[in-house]
Image (cartoon, rainbow, N blue to C red; front, side, top):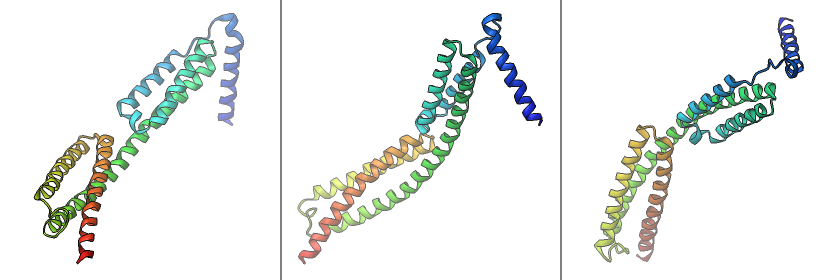
Length: 201
């Protein structure tokens, strides 16, 4: 009952402001709400929300622009509402950013384990290939190239771990997926070579 009464009073107050503003000039643009919305969006971006919750940040920016457009045509009540929406969207973006960072970091840590296992497999397979009549047997250069690639991949993997530790999570995740694909391709090449050799025996 009290909530209903409060709502009716607010509605009456807003109606009075809208009705009498052309005559009294008392209604003012919601500058404070626009400033608050801009601050909330800036804070979200400082938390990298534009990277991890880009869609929601965009919605917040669009809401803020809409509020400014309402102010331009002196629709202050609408501007206040949309400015408040922009603040809520910015807060949602900040929350999603932390959630997505945690999720991506957890996934990256799992991929790192998989990559390390694959590198160990490639080391073993390349050694086996070197000792058999495979294309790697034709010249030691091929074997040494693989060893160089393994060294390069291990360095890249360490850099990725450093980025992950430094909270450059999205950057580390993207680099890790690219590295995993490269290593997977090389593993398939070596396995194919070994399989072909075994069939010839």
